[in-house]
Image (cartoon, rainbow, N blue to C red):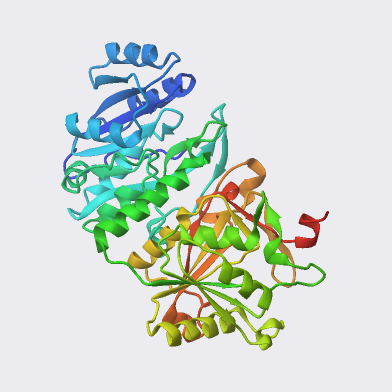
Length: 464
């Protein structure tokens, strides 16, 4: 590892940095994490060790270190699992540092981490946070990968994706000015605080290795509740920025009665509920204002007239010309939306496309899609899930491997692969009307793979 000359990176002043190490049954890694703080070339720091409801030897290890070093100000012992947001606010209220940084007990710092981060932070009074790159490591502390493209440019291009929450140096006063962390969000991965800070501060990066990110079976980044927390953050930002203002939304559900050699598709049942009822009941439980079913089937129209849903369903009998493969999805959506406008004399802001061929076990991402439109400049948003398998791309001459880390069970943020999961596509009506729905200016809403199930082969799936 490259050695840095401390004199070359000497800051205008050496502000105090508060480091807090959080352990939840990570006693087997805790010594290495604490020692990485003690070995910093930048010496003006204080350390808080957090015992987050541990049932292992974490508290014993923490107490041993604190007795030997006066810079370890306090060992905080939580007897119940309280969440990273609450822990962050607790340290924020009692720390003395001009800057504050969280280090997870299963990770460890590069020896020059604080020196590099503080040097960048001190370069401008407008900087509220500084982050850097990291190396992947396994349970035995062996380096197994490097994500080389985590930088501020990528963050700015994907303005709703924060690189990471841990090992980012924050200006303590700026965190206090924005009210600290929101404790109703338990699984914190940096999103909310990044959103709040970037409205008033600069966020900068250093192109250096700051920490070692350990990948193991209990890594927080692999848990489902991370996506749920991100959805809560998106909702919170939307509500705080736009209050009670709601975008007018319209759902279009194109339905065919028969497809290839499969008959009565909408009435096929999954767990005793028909595909048509599953989709419409899901949409009815969301913030979407109006629902239009577009179909050429008299049977489907007759069925819907007899059914009662939580919201009124507008049924449009579309021309059979839309049944053939020549007609694009855009054509069907534009035609259906225009029929709705003619009927209701009101225009939607956003138009959603839903397919009855997708089973949705969790639907909060539908409302979060509306929220995303409020504070991003996307023309279209797709519902996606992370691709867990190695994926390849063919450029006409040869194949290249995308996200090579998947073979090592690593998630390279700069090579993250997601796929359309069939749940929804949403677009501004103006964008759709101009046939630019599938243009380049799009965003995504990530859904856990277990919450969306796309039936790609109806015949095979519903075989008697």
